[in-house]
Amino acid sequence: MKRLAILLLMALPLAAQSLDQRITAILPGLLDTYRTLHANPELSTQEAKTSALVGQRLRELGYDVTTPFGKYPDPALTCYGVVAILKNGNGPTLLVRTDLDALPVTEQTGLPYASTNAGVMHACGHDVHMTTLLGAAKLIADLKSQWHGTVMLIGQPAEEVVKGAQGMLAGGLYERFGKPDFAIALHDWAGLESGRVGYRPAQFMAATDSVNLTIRGVGGHGAAPQSTKDPVVLAAQTILALQTIASREHSPLDPVVVTVGRLEGGTKRNIIPDDVRLYLTIRTFKPEVRQRVLDSVQRIPKGLALAAGVPDDRAPVYEHLDAESVAATYNDPALTDRFQKAIGRELGADKVVLIDPAMVSEDFGLFGMSGQIPTALLALGAADPAKLASNTQPGLHSSKFAPYVPETVLRTGIRAVVAGVLDLLGARH
Ligand SMILES: [Zn+2]
Ligand SMILES: [Zn+2]
Image 1 (tube, protein in one colour):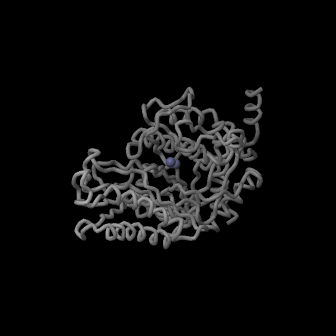
Image 2 (spheres, helix red, strand yellow):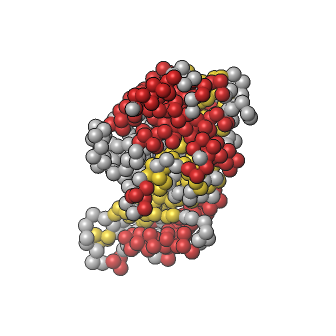
Image 3 (cartoon, rainbow, N blue to C red):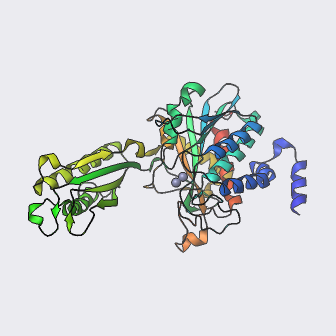
């Protein structure tokens, strides 16, 4: 039956084929690629084989491919970016991005094509994004009569450590290949059932700030606290006081997260140490709120140290880790609306839904150069509806995460991307 359907499909005049029919013809090959990528994950900044595979496949489809591309501040690291260009006459340039990297997670999905790289897993679904991009790239190349302009496909490394977009921009992405008129991407979503696409205009994902605080005191004997300034007690007060930033200093309608995820200090129960280190992650949406929260994270520990009588030269030390921080992902409302409507026409409007913003972070927004280029990142549903209903769906980054029916997720993603490309670069506009 299946073979008959494929034969019938092949008999259709090419131009009359729907995107769905075209995907049916290439899906078996894409699933092979997906399983290969899933079984061979590579960590952030180490995507040598993954970028080579993606680059090679795009080259075979007729794209002009450059890889590895990009530059990290650390000269010892290779930035394994992929840039694939397909020019098709005059018209706008559209950037479409996939990420390439995997996570330090030991896979527990039990899938026959589970990771063969111990302790590393595509637990964020970047293998889905790559395969979607490869499928879309094939259709975009086949449908050249339906669009004009330039398609710039990007394979971005090191998304999980928010280094890769910056690395590609620092390597001269726009100077060398031209500045796009708009940029789009999909990220799979464990909060949305497979077969659907979610969108959120304006604030979509939070900014991340990584901060280290060193709470300094004056150490001494655990039995003689009166002759010390105890940084452990001060660190405990600081952690609790930091919780008042979100709960007391900001509107409950404007989400802020301040988490102390790691706490380090002391050597022995009867020794009061000289200092204690706190490791924070901070999530905000608006640039002005981001700055205010960071100001509070500096002010509160200083005030508490003063109250505890810590000498000035032992005041807390605040360190902001620029390389582990990233601005919020802002979806240009007009572009987001146009993209989601194009997807709605392709999939059916009921398959495209408005979703909530998320406190996780992304570096895709950096391709927008602080609002110079409109960007839109949409969510590709990957959840099992039954597990979603029973609240047992494993989330992204979980060792048990797997897209529910990969065929469905890939088909939906490819249709969405191609619908976006044909709309944004279509003859109608
Ligand atoms: Zn991730
Ligand atoms: Zn991801």
